[in-house]
Amino acid sequence: MSSSSASSASQQSSLSRALAPYGWDDAWAAAFAPYAEQGLLPGRVVRVDRGQCDVLTADGLLRAETAFVTPHDPMRVICTGDWAAVEPGGDPRFVRTYLPRRTAFVRNTSSNRSEGQILAANVDHAIIAVSLAAELDLGRIERFLALAWESGAQPLVVLTKADLVPDPVGLSYLVQDVETTAPGVQVLPVSSATGDGVEILRAVVSGGTSVLLGQSGAGKSTLANALLGADVMEVQAIRDVDGKGRHTTTTRNLLALPGGGVLIDTPGLRGVGLWDAETGVGQVFAEIEELSQRCRFHDCAHEAEPGCAVLAAVEDGSLAVRRLESYRKLLRENQRIVAKTDVRLRNELRRDWRLKSAEGRANYAAKRGGGR
Ligand SMILES: Nc1nc2c(ncn2[C@@H]2O[C@H](COP(=O)(O)OP(=O)(O)OP(=O)(O)O)[C@@H](O)[C@H]2O)c(=O)[nH]1
Ligand SMILES: [Zn+2]
View 1 (spheres, rainbow, N blue to C red):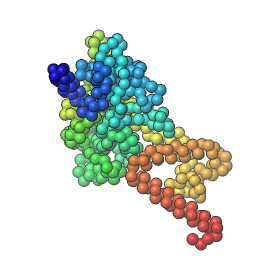
View 2 (cartoon, protein in one colour; view 1 turned 45 degrees about the vertical axis):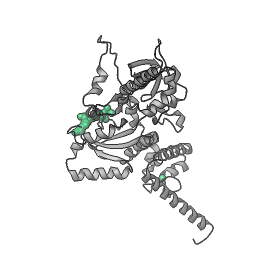
View 3 (tube, helix red, strand yellow; view 1 turned 30 degrees about the vertical axis):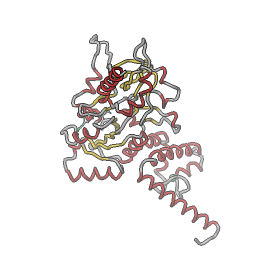
View 4 (cartoon, protein in one colour; view 1 turned 90 degrees about the vertical axis):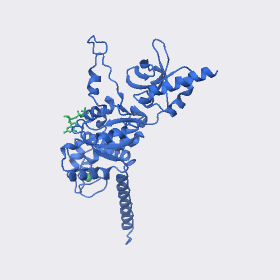
């Protein structure tokens, strides 16, 4: 009895040693206990393809079928970063289930959250890479922040290519601008070229799982390689496992960092820059955006403003009301997502709402012929 509990204790500790670099901790172990009793192996999902996934277990990398963990609800489909319970053997072997997620990155493919697409699970830090090579787009940073906060991860803004802003005063202003846009978020200038700031970032990400978000060209790959201490990203992608030139690439979307911590980099997250709802809305409703250039007020909401070119177009029949309504709906939806998380914008909206209701009261009073 004592020998079996001793052996299970030593099993536990060797399991922890093997999986700790991938984020395994006491809480995961506790959550996994009932599955361990069933003889299932814990492992972290490093990649998911159609019908199968690669799971990193104490026994190494295993390939397993995902039929049991791909329900109709796309939000509940197993994804990179999940802690899976894998069958110890079998051909094929199956993932039986995965542990409840602490956080989840989701792409909102529509207003309906259940239609979202799950991109990564159990992420602690969302690193938003913003290049200093171009002018700061605070609106874009806000949208990435919204996405990050919504996931449950702690966002962190990394201003990349800091070497391109050699003037320290200028740099501190840029940092301040972003800090004002991102309350509660650390803003860190970093240069992968000179290594400035990389150590600070390494320390931040050493305690948990991180993802890199940001526009194409923001410097994510370069930063990932700086953190990994090698061109692992490239190396991973081109490695030919069986040496037979069959291009059996084994890209892991989840990697342990040498300084501690885990980095998740999936193609889906890469493309999350497309989650640029406002720009997207603008593109989809290009004709309305064009009309709005001719509104009397540059911040015209096309609700009841005098000199509104959009309402005029509806009036003369050249713009369908339906089109305007759906444009409004999408803009509101986008605002709601951002406002949920962005204190500054939330306050602005609130102020706006107060003004509107004050206006409404004034109009009402005027109609009734009242003086106030
Ligand atoms: N000056 C300077 N250039 C950098 C730095 N980091 C990255 N770059 C350059 O910026 C360009 C884009 O870098 P990537 O790392 O490929 O950007 P990415 O965000 O991974 O881009 P995608 O893969 O398209 O998402 C490359 O030409 C890099 O050499 C930096 O610290 N300083
Ligand atoms: Zn207007």
